[in-house]
Length: 172
Image (cartoon, rainbow, N blue to C red; front, top):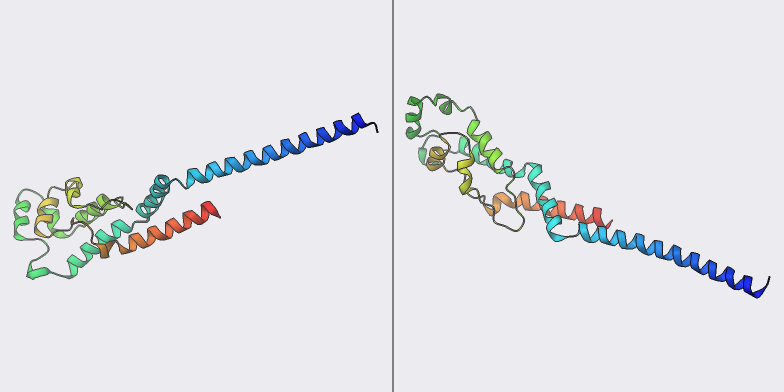
């Protein structure tokens, strides 16, 4: 084989190797870009918050509050105070028979309130409950107070698990 042909064959082989290497680098760069996108702190935080909110943990905190109120009567005051009896005269009779509407509405309102980095505020959410007696009931027997650190422990534990799961998925 003449020297020119050998040289051209080697150059062509090197060009093929170079093209293959460039393609592999482009694949790696695309994977790295995807990895950086998925590891974006804001997006990662949003995914974890969504997972916690979709889990129902926040609603469970509210359900536990109502359960506690039903079994523990503070200071001997009944669950439905005398003030609410005036509402019966206005046609709100069902509120006093324990229909569970207030509990269901309160759970619905707090269901998606988990935040990883911001304080979790429930005190201003009473107006979102679509029942005329909700604020009166909350004044007498508060149920829309901000969740305590102890109440939020399961939510933060679950958030840690979700974050770990997301990182394993991304990096694994």
